[in-house]
Image (cartoon, rainbow, N blue to C red; front, side, top):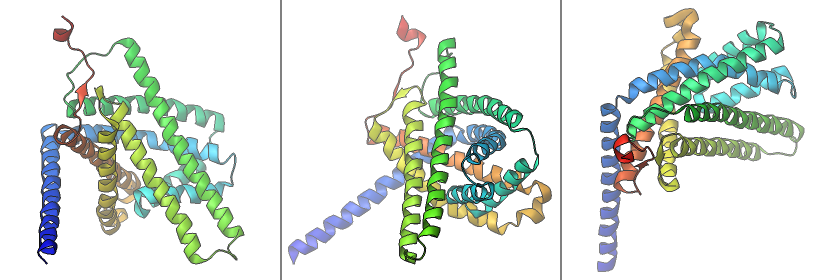
Length: 309
């Protein structure tokens, strides 16, 4: 009896200790978030992301329609977007996709314009993201050499291609699941179909963790352990998913069309994008605090003029 009582006390102490530790990390990260004025960088990055959206959607739609039916691709793209952003934002983006496809612009011209726009906006987004993360993680300000500047631009566009490739993969998987489910619907039970879609959602979450881990690991001018970057990415993904309920509830109940009229699609997408970027930056601040307190720390890779002497 005494051993059981001692075990219960130890478990209560451990749980309380974990909760206290988590609370300290959360509050410390929030303090850093405000001290670094992260919301300003978030607004800039969200703006560049909004500019790049039509070009990105147009390219994805053009490439996918080379393999699948146009209406089927629209449906699958919206389903994948809805998994990440929620139904409200997905519906607004569906209107954007319909508007783009209705323009009837020559595909070569449209693709060229989209690629040029993506190159321009991706480099701006990458630069803003790198500057922000360097500030959050206390990297000394430094001027980039031309070679490093070119490399950053190449990395930025490469990341856009990778993200686009991952989205293409998700759409391909979704299309394959839809075709397979339709073909085997007489033999598949409802539970089996739900299980398959559950795997798809899990795969989407894993991609989010991988994306955030890569951002924290490779973009800022620092050395950070994979474990610390991974923990920060997991926390960011969890916050992102939890926060989606709030942003979805808000966007669902404000009746955007009655408030903003024809401008509601872009405003809804801007609201979601701004929130998402703020979550990522808070996750970056959390990663910094966690790494300094319980991890291996974050070390700057920048050599200042004083250190060169």
